[in-house]
Image (cartoon, rainbow, N blue to C red; front, side, top):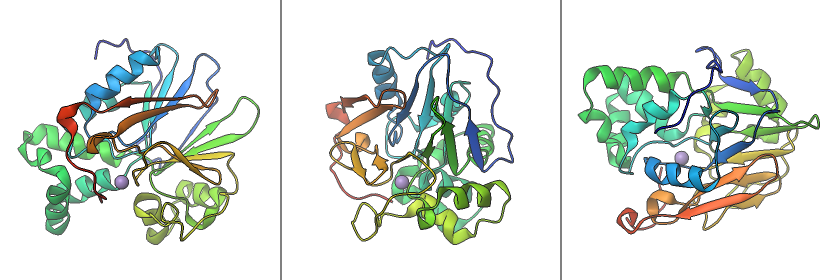
Length: 256
Ligand SMILES: [Mn+2]
């Protein structure tokens, strides 16, 4: 990718929630569902004048599947300025790589066949990298507030309960699944402010442009479906989008 590395260390492998201090050196950006569109992400970061020496990039998950360049996820996750939560697609990949045949079929049917074509060491590297992904990231604001990041939704609209449940390993599987799979907010059958964060950044359910539901901002703008890829700056709330290339036009439909 031609971007210089800095010396920040990655989170410990056991951490299911990652807490980041406010970035006093540069800017923090969040990106919506990438789904293998890493070349598009590189162009978008150039548009944003992203500086890998001091800026950070947070992914809301679903970095892989359907797009042209899913295997590049390993390079991106190796960058010290790149932070990501797991999405349901990374979870399907984990379950498939752990030998769950039902998950393997489901993953392949949802754009995951690239994983089976990788050499065994790279498949193992994907398993290790995806298993390290936290369910949630919490970023401190310079003014004492916090911004949350997860893939789908926050169980019970209660960030503190989620954060402590993830930190001490007591969060029930049903709540973990809400963070990975829920579409209820986007379908308007569920709403309300998420307590304990100023803003929650999510993806998972494609929107025509970044869409806010109460204090929950959905950044999935359907890049892999011929929509666009969206960046959001946590410092000044600026949004930046790049339309997909024509060859990414695959038809818009609801994905897993
Ligand atoms: Mn998803």
